[in-house]
Length: 253
Image 1 (spheres, one colour):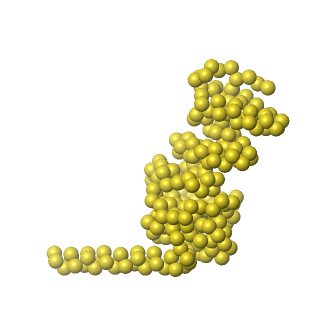
Image 2: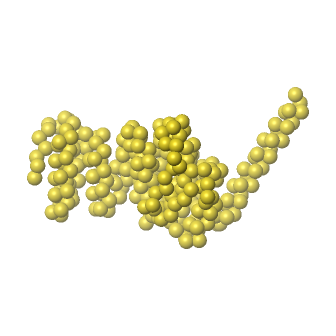
């Protein structure tokens, strides 16, 4: 096998990174995943910003069912992809981290992507509609399929997984256990307050990916439909109250 000659603390060169990746693959091929893990861990200590090393570590951890470590690598990759302005991959890794470890809060990552992406950059970069991924359970465009329709499909199928919503102004997700809404995250908020924002998103795309793990219950609902109606009623009442106050202020002027 190739030998990495750099001293401790010295970043791994691109040539050495290729050697590390090759050796890791050979260790896996010959049923020595612990050696591959150790090799990659040591290399990452010297080159923590190497995307290829972290992607290889993530891949090996997933295959070896080391899901906690795989989720950690996904979160590290989010920051690296944000720095590279590859926001789609950053969001994919953030979603994957949540699916691998339901305890992970993705709110900080969502906020980091939102701030880095900038609506003006997102619009000017690509005038074409956002692409919908095809490697998920189901996906769609909110211009044609509403969030309510998506929730109904998930509930009727009693599916456990993550519904993610992307638009120029919002990055959000809603967690489901056996079809029931159990949490939401949107622009650094979570729980009911986040779902109140999610429910008003009317443009962008959505993707739903199933999960083998249930998510922590932050929102307790008996019926998704009743919960949706309650949130909509609260929002309508708040709007009516604001309009009433504004009208009263205008009359006093």
